Image 1: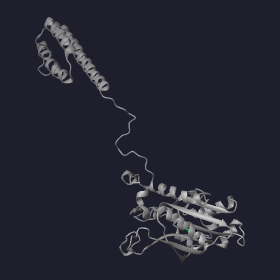
Image 2: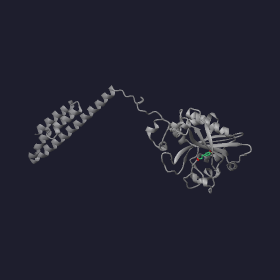
Image 3: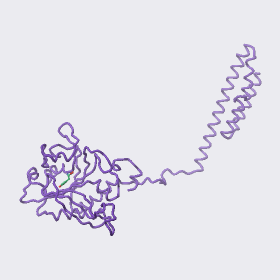
Image 4: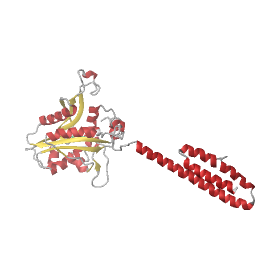
Length: 342
Ligand code: DAH
């Protein structure tokens, strides 16, 4: 029996070395140590041996089984390694080559529009200031002629914070005071920024959105300059000249205040068929005005010498119009299918 086992071991180890594929290994492994493999069959006889033989033969057969299994394992590794080396030698894989997938850099539509807006205003010698996201009650309200008792506070549902810097800015107008106090006259400033309001969210309302403010303080400034800057920005943005319409409107920090509409750039010949402007040929868009004397007093500017205007608009809304986006919630979502369109 001992001899039979040793012979089986030598034959098996020699054969294992000649196996060339994983499948051959599996088949031969079954033939030796499988359910009715030749080694398994021999081992079945052990139970009929004497106690001493059981001990010696049992140990020997166990050692043989272990070394055969190790040999199988070793050969399998050799085969796999050779396969990988062959693959590497035959297939050239350039990790630096561009993939077919669309991995190009896509700018967020808000960034895209802002880039265009910066371009327009830089041509008109405006400076860009970024709006602070955390502001104070004073900057966001009081300095803009909206004291605590003013009913206009209710127009903006505010997130209040604890401490000195105590509101999330509800409007980029909250930067007006800082800009006036830190700049030399004349001032031409454009102020983009993220603002926050406690809104119920739906397709047209978000609690987080972007506004762009602009302020001009100079000598001999009048409403014509206000119209011209808006016309220039919209013309650049839509690639088409638009008309501007002003309607009186109330904002506590401007006098007079106006709401501004622009002629729909998408109506081709018949506005009664245009869905973008809702069949009206005009799009309601932004607010503006000549800054209120109370606000100017806060800024120590002499109203007899200087004139000024300020406007603000909701960037998300303008971008929705430009790209025909029908849901404001897209802007805050990491949705690649949406973002890759821009
Ligand atoms: N800050 C106002 C808002 O968020 C918009 C606004 C109105 C800005 C009139 C202005 C302005 O600069 O003159 O509702």
